Length: 125
Image 1 (cartoon, rainbow, N blue to C red):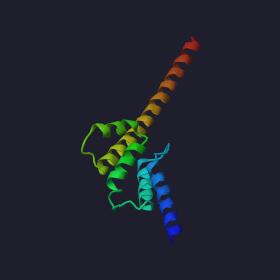
Image 2 (image 1 turned 180 degrees about the vertical axis):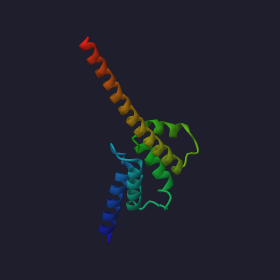
Image 3 (image 1 turned 90 degrees about the vertical axis):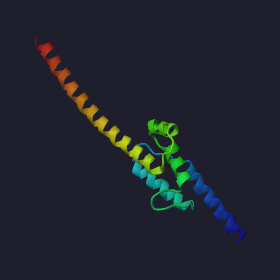
Image 4 (image 1 turned 30 degrees about the vertical axis):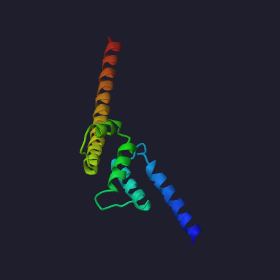
């Protein structure tokens, strides 16, 4: 019986360590990261509800583990940010960043086409 409780304690400690060191992977969406944190929280026996992770622990892990450094800094500046607001901020910035990359790629392609056209006209003269 004593060995079983030690094994359970060690396993729980290991899972808690995995949760406490979780970071958003490169290319991992905010939704995927939140889902991964929720799953880790359940395996760590943190108190969870349908709408939030174990509130304090999970909010803090989401803030510290996000790859969005701009919003990470923002959460430290602003008070009264609950988990829902933080997730919304991160998702909004994720979508905006994707749209900016798309626009930047399109502008770059158009610029390259324009420059190629000018080089061709310069060479022919």
